[in-house]
Image 1 (cartoon, helix red, strand yellow):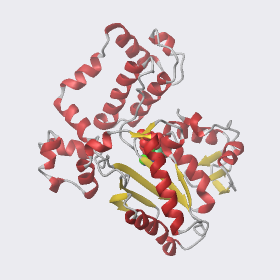
Image 2 (image 1 turned 180 degrees about the horizontal axis):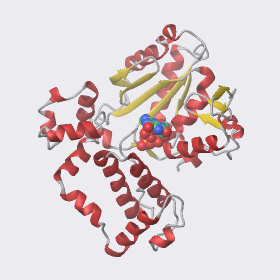
Image 3 (image 1 turned 30 degrees about the vertical axis):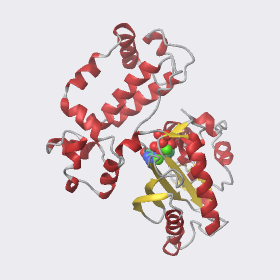
Image 4 (image 1 turned 90 degrees about the horizontal axis):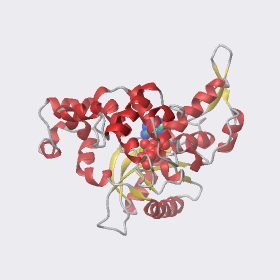
Length: 336
Ligand code: 8DG
Ligand code: CA
Ligand code: CA
């Protein structure tokens, strides 16, 4: 997951409300480690960010999906006083502020952030003096902290897409390459770049050891092309790393993920990595209602006892929607 979630376009008439809900969400994730509340606040912020007009009251907002009694009350307080007491209290505590800041570093989660704070780390500069406390991933997260906080304009991802496709298809023209995530959902800017690739010779039936070369050769090729600058981690099916446009030696470094999916499972993977994650949750819940189980690999029918059967044959994203009788949504309509 990339760390900053935007609900704050300046045209959004509920911008300030979305912002305080997102702050509460981050607090619940990073400090309380309450993922349930984290998701509830994010869902509410996402609902409000799509409204064409300003919300007038908590009571009005309560009619919308994902907004219940407690959030409605907070909206009322904010609409009346311009702030939220709960959030003011949270921000008074140094530990909360430091832990939230540290948890924004790529590779540092809530537990590690707390551990660092407990060991006396208060600022990014403190942390720079103690690289011994950090893993390889966390060191890179700290090194590129400012760049990774910056959103990536769509135009830049389009350029990166061109280079990716050209270089990988020079290596082997049979590779299929899709940039997923918020970019595929049509967003004007993204937190990171999520690339999904497959190859017709890479299928779920085969010996996976022999196949581990696919991703490695792709990464090598992009390193040679000077697009990939750092590797955070590289396994058989997942690369996490850093890239930069080779033409822009002064430009920001960007987080780049590349995943290799098997050819027969490609569309479940495309659907999953396109997201949004809130949309994915809703779609998986709908699948369960229809007695199917859906994940990033397969769609399987469940027996009355709840045991998954064979994978359904899938030839495009639409197949998945059709089978579970979920009205088709284009990627642009999945910004839930
Ligand atoms: P952004 O990077 O512009 O902030 O947005 P994004 O592209 O939607 O988010 P992401 O964090 O990069 O995740 C990419 C997709 O992966 C997401 O849209 C849906 C899928 N996904 C989930 N759950 C999770 C998860 O827990 N971790 C990660 N890394 N991805 C997830 O549905
Ligand atoms: Ca990502
Ligand atoms: Ca992304």
